[in-house]
Length: 438
Ligand code: 5AD
Ligand code: SF4
Image (cartoon, rainbow, N blue to C red; front, side, top):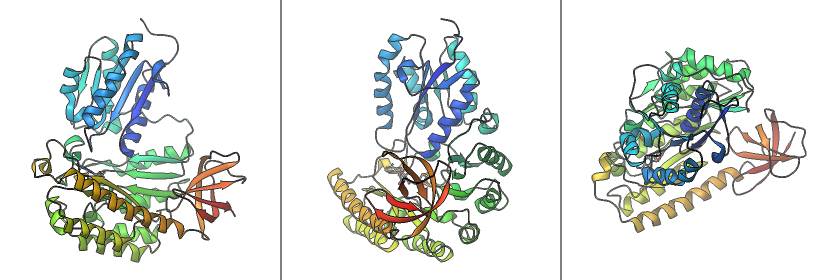
């Protein structure tokens, strides 16, 4: 069949991290130039893109079974094109093409700017595979973000890749070496987002605090972004403890737009395990970083990531993790059972008994959940700033995020998405706060 007069439909399914959410937006915008608009319905799509994640657990197998489920759609619409993007595409490239004849296109995270040209080839009946790590800046080559209005919050990728090589992690292999986008391009994108209604930007990078696209590093970029008209709030994620320099910590004290929230993964509280993880810091060094950040910004909410059941982790190592958690008092946490990733050093080592790892994960999560809840409960009675995002489930209800990234519900108030208001917190539930607009 030839080109239809109406727009072609693109269905994108995004797995994994916030960077994939950002990448999915950028790919959608790039394909808009090829006449595509986004749809929520795979059954009416002319192209389906799976933007995949490879960080944990049988990721590739999940992608193959998802692809299998798309078979009837392809049978119903032979013109449907199916693409795999993201980190599984990078890691599995040719294997996907070989194993799954359904797939027309495989594109790795560093090649998204080549997507329009690949789409044209695929439309012509060919299959396209690109998992290069090209020299050129993909974002500079991607179509500019269109001027359409958008919600009050946005992600903005400023740095990609990682040179740290933690022994468990695929990121240095799937996303490649650390690359920072130049500050002027980031600033131009932020201005564009602000013009389209965005008031809060979360800067993304696998190692965002190693950002070096501004002479003043991430702190310099944050100060420049804070001066952009219309941008009221800035956040950044994810950081490595060894890259929390004085300038960035000072920014937490001095830049009002920089929100009092820090996601700083430590993974384990045991020095023995940290060494085996190739983290290049001790538990104590991590605690000292937290102390310095809290000295600069006493109300900062600390968030973290943990892995339990890393190869050779003993009960004593695990208890050291529980001790560290008790010392930090996390406001938010993500904890995972270790998952051996093919090609990473730790995958080859003696593994912890899975039942033991499950038990540790449960014990850690019980502690973390209680801690998060205690931090959240302490907000009751306080006055906080909330950036409203969307209506809640009940009539007249609106929900937004506080400076500390807590979800806050208010009812019956005269607020709209994009409004930044003072709210008195009145109660705390499992995963959110409720309050009244002042
Ligand atoms: N197994 C379990 N968790 C992992 N993470 C990264 N790699 C693995 C793995 N192989 C977790 C880390 C990281 C987060 C993004 O995912 O905690 O900080
Ligand atoms: Fe992976 Fe983060 Fe370690 Fe880099 S610093 S290897 S992204 S866990």
